[in-house]
Length: 297
Ligand code: GLU
Image (cartoon, rainbow, N blue to C red; front, top):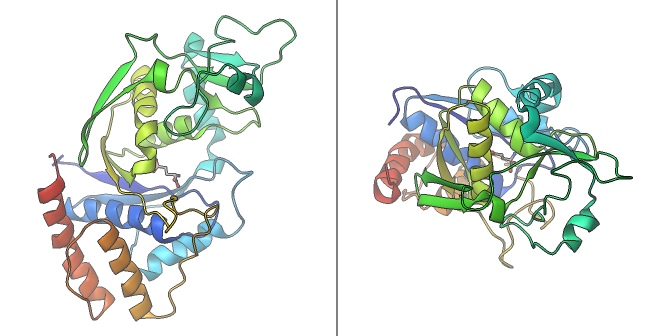
């Protein structure tokens, strides 16, 4: 374990916290506590168009109700445009303006990246075609053959991705003017001194892009641990779109039941808890045991 540990939970306030978000919150919180480190909370409201008024505040209130108190001040991405711009400016010619719309990218038939985004064919790499205006800003990735990124996930072990084949030149600033998640997350993890990223496995396919950005910006790569994603009966990832219900504990028993459900989803082995205090007392050693059994570290 690193001598210094800074972890974080980084919800996007696109709706209320649901059972899936609680799993990521719990895992990141327990990992920080077991390591004797700090646990930060960052509100990823960089996509202001998708942010729902009041969702961030109720997420923060829920974390407190469940006994998860963060360290320091909450960081709000929507207030950090200047910081993202400064990082972007350092990329120089590695970044370039792109005039393609979604249709044009889909029509290129390079297919979709593992995370569902269309793989960009590189149309505007050498300059905007005549008659096109810049819509988004993209980062040049190395060509096939030099594009392999491997990292050690603390649960999954070695994970390899090929940036050119699996993602293509990816967006740093979107056509609608918002900074992209990939840039904001890398800059903020660095500026907050994050040493350990613990988050849902749906983001494992973003990790190689983030590591590449860290490298070109001269930032260290944190350790990564991706935890299982909670799915509904149809096998869909829980989200507002798939109808996940908001967590709203009515009383302490209810709160304890929610925490147990999240702990179970993580594969933690725990007996019943008669109070929230008991849940937290038992959860720390249960997480430490899970790391021993599943962990590659
Ligand atoms: N904001 C992302 C989400 O809510 C998490 C980003 C991350 O942990 O890197 O899914």
